[in-house]
Length: 334
Image (cartoon, rainbow, N blue to C red):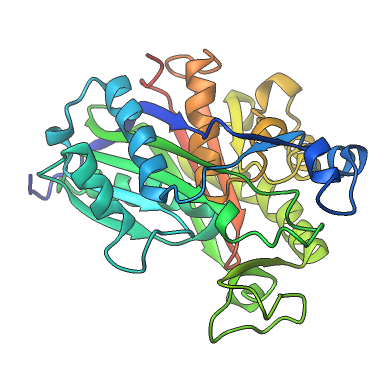
């Protein structure tokens, strides 16, 4: 579909997939010098999902995408574009999105990956909306998918307790009323070294294991915490303002699930009650680019979002990047 007329964009379907394997804090106590109490009090995480050895990011992405298509009541060949947000692609090229296209049978769809760290799903959702608004495409499948367990240093107690695997997906479709508003994207490259997946010819940090077989997650926790507690609420406020939605109309905040203390700080600044904030970090940990997509799909499936509700999605992470959008909910609860 091509054309110049501006049209509305709305989320019409959601889905998520997480591996069956649960890694508990008690198990981590046997692996590194940590404790369940230490992990829970500092992060809110109780367990996370770990994909079986050899599992591809594309496999998780395809499962989540298939569920989102079912939720939107669309066939795969009705999808015009697939965007996969990931920092753990199966290969640098071809893109994970191309593999997902083939596995779904979405033969008409263009496909590409997007790398924006933990902000990836929201970046991808905003990108999808632009193709819809411009009249270029009618249906875009957005997926955030990660197999972070392949890049975790399981000897580093400061990071290995945080991350998990999974995928979340949403269908963004042309609509009469615009349901994707208030796009707020940002980046601060001066913080590029404080959080990321480093390795190969670029090993800038003494905290990385030079003997490791591949890239590893590195994070300066205090710097990331200070950045996240500042930017999460700020991005949400800016998104609401740009969307023309009064703060008191906000029905649900769905933040990146990195750390309960960060989420709590954002909720406090936004004057939100507990029931206005969606949290699943306790069960999945930090799934990076998949995090917001998983939370959105869970919230929809649990009936936490009703038609007409204003929902803010906000992500923050490596780059350093941040992203927020305000959704006026129209679908995706089936």
